[in-house]
Length: 310
Image (cartoon, rainbow, N blue to C red; front, side, top):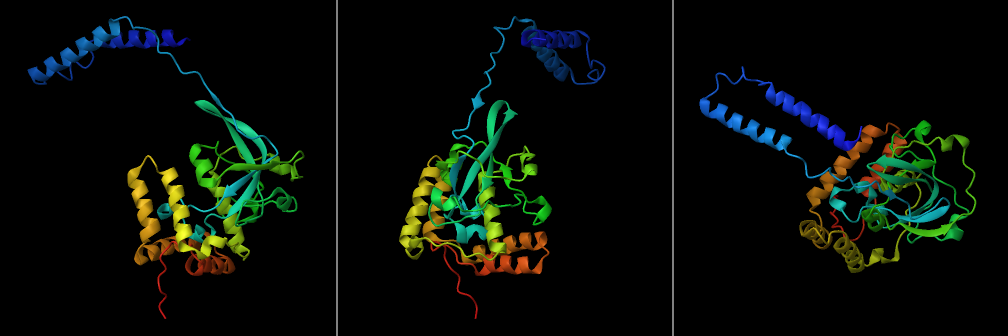
């Protein structure tokens, strides 16, 4: 049935209901003024329904949101949540602005009003202070991780569907093409039966960070970590780009970077983070490593440090 015929059918049903004196019994005991108002409304509605519509509503045609990459492309992915740290995870602080890389292994189409190409990626088991070089990644394995962070081996896999990239994804995660592989590496056959359910690009970084901490691997360091002013200006430059249309959030970001977070707020966020991980992981070794990462890990220089009690 076409769009106009469907609208006509609905209009005819509505007129039939109005002509049937619907709900008259319910309004019999109402005040005369209320009954008169109801009658006026029903008359106007009937006139509107009987009037010839100016024309059927034109529907916007579907668009196909295509990926700017193809299978085999290798992308850089920045870690951390520098753009909105007060809502982020304390667990990510030592890893802010470090990098990993992902490989596009496949894509599928999602119908969400428009058609979106959804990339499927494998994350390199690599982390560095700067963007990766293709020659460095050539000898690197891929991460077998769990983007739901359940911590169990049976839920870990190599392939993950991530959101069709939006403007904030490019800005927040520094998504850019590093190179291209003409032939994909060999992955287990069962990996190609991946879930067609998307997750955020940042979750890929969090998944790598989680595995990095649980395995006790060293955290790469940037040369500017010893330069407090350089770190603050770098964070501020990114914030101005990201929040340029929201002056309220931009001011919050400025205060966070240049004035710091109150010590009691910092401790509260850390405690909340620990409670989440404590419930999620029962392994005492994993708990010990997570405790160390949250409460004893090195934080970026632009955060105010609280003197530990002796």
